[in-house]
Image (cartoon, rainbow, N blue to C red; front, side, top):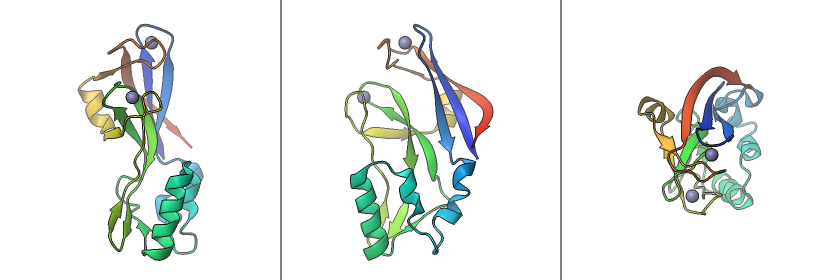
Length: 148
Ligand SMILES: [Zn+2]
Ligand SMILES: [Zn+2]
């Protein structure tokens, strides 16, 4: 089950919903990392380069998805332009360590940093609007609806 965060801009009509966690359609991540179908997680990865890295780690380095910890859609922020994004996050343990996905900002290509949605809500942090570019205009609000 996932949670939806709603972001709205005070300055323009920008409105976006961020899906966090993992939706019903994928079942639980335990299923995703089961031995019968260890590569299903690839369905959630859209970058071909990252898919290739994950396949290589699973097939040659005993890679397994650490499913109980943090896996699912997570909230990321760009430290340069301060826009927020949701991306799929997971930990893949393998022989040489732990692989975590890295993402770049679609606005400015800077590396995205994961942020805790609870902290964002509690501290009422504001972000840059990707539509009107107004700084500190986007507010993140919690919504109760769950996605599937
Ligand atoms: Zn705006
Ligand atoms: Zn950026």
